[in-house]
Image (cartoon, rainbow, N blue to C red; front, side, top):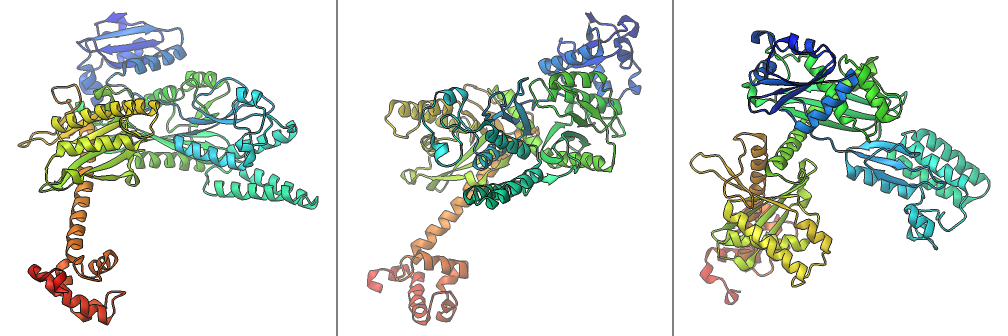
Length: 640
């Protein structure tokens, strides 16, 4: 029901959800209450009695919808659903709601296999995790596959295989699909994997040491050596694990901290007493609040009720159905947990307890969660910027890998394109590339250089970027766009050879393009995307524009530094290569010692002898030849 009155008596005294709407009918806030009347009455006070955020928000509210529910639990679930659907301006919205990687050990068969999954099902499988990094999870799976020879094939392949696969031949599978492998022996192997994934490595190592000694006593040295190798591999794999709760147990720890940029929430994943992984979430300051913090009051102190609401909403959104939920969740403040625990217990299909710290060790874990959140807040800002870019550019997904490119030349000479990579919330310098185009020498053609780069980049193959940022305006963007379309067509038709599959080419066609042009006469930088005549509207000084400018400046610095280095090497080579006996290696030694070509030219034989590898005779020969570099007309074969 929609109400346009701000009188508490007009609202029912029952549980429910309320939706505050602006004059344009847009939902700006969603909340839940045990009593709608009492909760809404807290908003209808005098403006000076309200916190900053609430006062500004209520200035925009023209009407209030409400939906009654039977219980507080129903209201909590409905609130989370409406927040996710409408993403109101004044709600804390969990944007990073992707499922994380889990290990799944399917124990429904006599010969279980270990796989990675993102969803917890109510089946006979056992789940371990979560891992926020898919790469880390896959690396761990590779290590487990090397240590424990469980079967790798799917059930359909397992039932129809007639001979062992390569995994068995290299000693990484017992091949129960073909051979008569004892079920009891396989179960022992599975139990070891479970101990490893539970973090109970000391128990596992103790058991393996006992088996190794028994095998050695029975003179079964081959088996003893195999167990010894397992022990060494497990020790190497687990030596960097951090034990933070000696008593063990599965626990998630939630910490909240305010920074100058906004609010951060840190989450620690502790499994069997070992810190497995961590994650942070960041909500920037509400810029519509005239510089006041979105989470608190005039004094800058957090409003307890609002922070409690934040954590409660976070828990409902984060621990969604299908996500792994531990038995205990540690929170930083008192919460009304009755309905919340009931919801999470149903999702887990087991008891979940939400509580505050009970001892000094748990206080330390809470502090660790807050510190991790602050340290990762910059990465979270980058994630938030990428999410906002995806939303404003209407990209199908948040760009995980971004490549920025810039063309450069010196008076038309040495044309090259620099490419940098931003992935996993950091600059991946190992993936930086420099493309040279001698065929464009003297042309001063930035468009041609970028078009040639696009063709070379596509031929080089994956990993493909989700987004390409081009330093330039609409012309540079059009050059890359046309080159991409032309090159993909040629690759599909076979007129260009690359060895790329049709699937890889389809993935490449999904790259989003963007260009960033510098503003003129003090104007803001302009962002262009294909198919748009006018620039994309990004707020001046906003996170998204600053993020793109940071990428643009980074690639500009990279290509300019490489351009200067290349020019310096060319000048050095062109001069010193004229001196007999001075090759690239000696030229490099001379440059490192004297630091400039002028110093090399003026060096005496005694000075040259200080360079490693140059003796008296060579020093005298080089000194005489180097003097001639000051008189180019005397250089040439006849001079020697």
